[in-house]
Length: 447
Ligand SMILES: Cc1ncc(COP(=O)(O)O)c(C=O)c1O
Image (cartoon, rainbow, N blue to C red):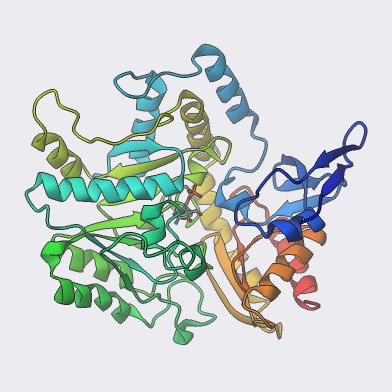
């Protein structure tokens, strides 16, 4: 690979930077370095490229920036926090904001999911949730339960726990057998529901896959069932009507912990604080990240039911550490300050309600693309939607070209294979939705 460099143009004076040293995540590095898409500034609904182009952010960055970019309240809170207390050992020492943020998150979670464990990313939240499920069953004398059930096309981050649960093939195929004892249910993308808005009426029986694994492996060996309420990264697979409730019922009947991975769905994306509330199904454990700090600081969290928490606490000897797990940056002061400022914005500006109110307009606008010849399916719920395009040669080739062309035409979206995922910030106005759909229409016509 030859040397690559680029000239950053929107600077006081253009300056040359080397591109050789950085290995970019989930990016075709050689392609990027040949044709860099550099972003140097962001505010509200927009990004600016180093060439001065104004780009509408159609994916809230990576489903994080629900309150829009450049929120001064968050920047100020982080700055003040770092000046007052920059770091404190999270093991055996505390600082007030981590307790305050846990309380505020627990106010948003459904049911008794009121015990909050902080981590630094969605991937860490998933691995933490796996350990919580194992520790819970150990604590109640059912230590034989160490299998997990997840789903095809699932994305649960990139650590080995999450990769083992994952059902997106490219994310696991190069990494060996991963963890043992994981069974994957079928995904819910079925042609009967193509172009159906919201929850499809077909496919509830796919939840019976969990029962088949129970029959095959024995419930006494299964710790937890992990699902994204809406499978996000694979391209917004909205669950069929009744599907999540059926999983809930099966888990209840067989003592299996139900985990919702709400890393994308959380913080207003589906019109409620969490998808659990939108779909009226409460899991036992819930993972979250991204929107918790509006993307301004790395942070994730796991919300755990009081029942599970108390079981684990109750099984430990007096004075003992109850759960041997945690990260150097668990509950770091800076993301906690960012999280508190973010939750204030969501509340004060009524952003979850705002997203819910905008959803019908958003979905109508996207469905107007139904007749574009290259489009093979559209799915959506809340302010999260995906458009599949017919493959053109190798799988993913057209989707990648589409996402690049959209950026050049002034729209940032996340692509996944031959699919683009649209998830605007919850501050979006109708005019932004119109601009997103105009850009999609224009670009889809030539891709
Ligand atoms: C459902 C889900 N779980 C976990 C993750 C991993 O989060 P992170 O990239 O912060 O590790 C993601 C990221 O998109 C996700 O969508």
